[in-house]
Length: 229
Image (cartoon, rainbow, N blue to C red; front, side, top):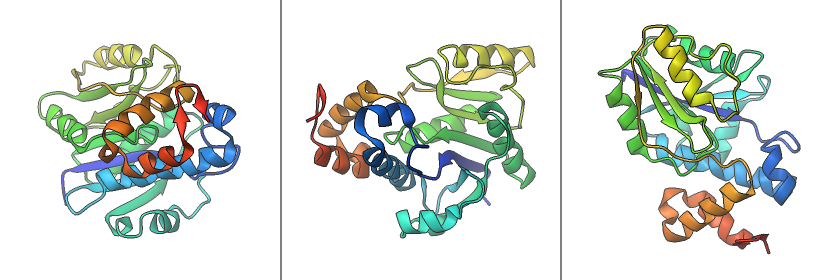
């Protein structure tokens, strides 16, 4: 068994429950298609024989393995899933680390599902950082993080207001308060609102390989700098 688990915090695409801020700009149905493309690209980047990829999903009563088998049939055999647990995002993140630690992984890298343009090298950078540090963070441009990696399931989540501009800063402070060392890897941006999506569309027009499923869908959507034409 590899020493590292990669875990994607994911949602089962459901109308009216998926990326609601973005849905206000582009509509529920288009948002569902887009989120499915995000997940397909994450599988494309991260699933394979050299990485142990897990989806930790919500809501807990769905058959996420079957969903992934339908979404990415050639890659599903390289992935497994387990439900999220906890009343808030911080608790669910902590549970993900505890779950992988309990089954024997020495390192865990957790990423969100809002950055389909993540590169495999960012995962490698986080793995390597854990050779010398306790916590590795991939900062997001909005003040949160798109990636967090640890060797042990330390609680660096309690009391931190998630989805705010101070998440990375407060997480570093929480880690240091526990006597942990922290490293930062390359920053990235999440796709939460229309300006983020337009930024991604421009990137993918220049380099579709960064997220090929999302690139194809955005090309079909015909996004302009003002939104959907």
